[in-house]
View (cartoon, rainbow, N blue to C red):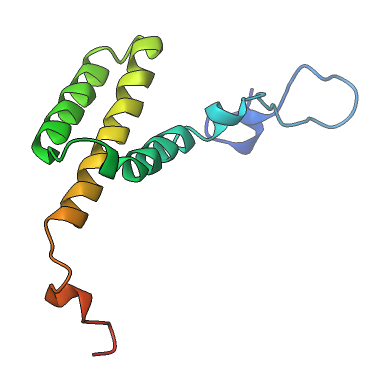
Length: 116
């Protein structure tokens, strides 16, 4: 019997003839890359920031509420997934609004670079 920490613990013991083969799970695209939808939601939130009212505190508050609801319902993935995605979208919107509307065009950050 292989030790639970040894590399042999991850091999398929059922295949009798021939060498042991690694066990592979067939994960879907989104299951194998769980942050892709969150990144897309964040990008979408950034792209719509000019089309929604300028209320970053509201977007941050709603995003925090949705993240808390996602933690509370973490055993129910059908509820958690939309909460996390909407939270990322609202965070992207708030981030873009704070970045764009709170700094004037002649702010010092517009004229400095890493080489200066």
